[in-house]
Image (cartoon, rainbow, N blue to C red; front, side, top):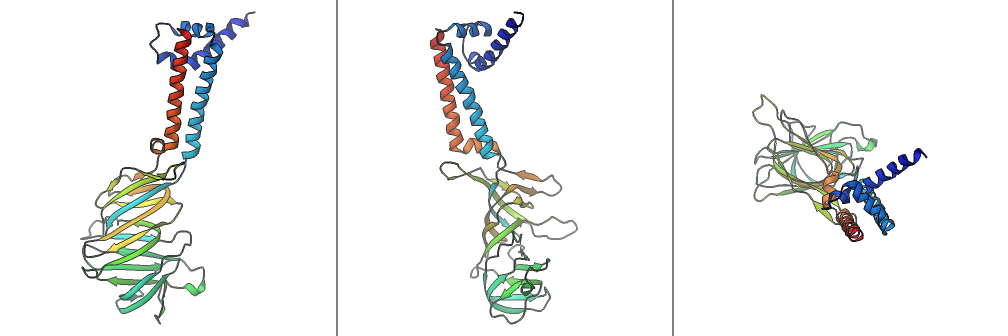
Length: 319
């Protein structure tokens, strides 16, 4: 017998929790205890409690779905920028695109002696690529291999079809862009745009301007939604942390200053480095996804409809 009041109190407590959100949202002249008594005395008590259980289960399910679908997924970055320096290294052994050379100046061994070459350039996967162009000057593309090749036949940075001499582990290609000469390069790999600002140096290659768009694919439609662009400032340096796919895009160099680049890549987050400031981390947060994915938006709308229906039924049952 002494335990009965405690059980009644415990039962009333969980009912208060179930009904609480509906009680505070209604203009009801009753206290919480009086409101609970009216629900328990109602002939529709089972219906009300059943709807309440459905509402809270639906809320828990939507939260669970949101977390499972969106937590920890990769972020897709779309980058459009004008820079004076861009670095590309290989991603997971994926082959670089082949470039067509037409009367390009080659400095083998990164030395001072040059020669004019033409042909298809194959870049080995152990090589890294660096584009540099200050202002409207000449474009220098440096290829260098710091790692030993997996295949002994692929020593050096690559090969040029029809070129007799062997390319060393450091070569430079020189281009002279103009109104009549525009160059386009497809690129795949891990990319870093912008250069480090150095003190006691007259001029260093820098990122001039750019925009970063964070995008993601909706679950049901498969269409991409895109965030507002994040503006890159003069002197910034941008890279993708823990890339899960290669970044792919194109580089265009013409008579306008610098190097124009557009590419897309996936990774855990984006990293913006600024001179003597803390790095800025960009990522596709769960809140951004919740606000843009039509699947989750639809689920939340259905939850609001269910919430309204429960309120109406409670009101009608108690009047």
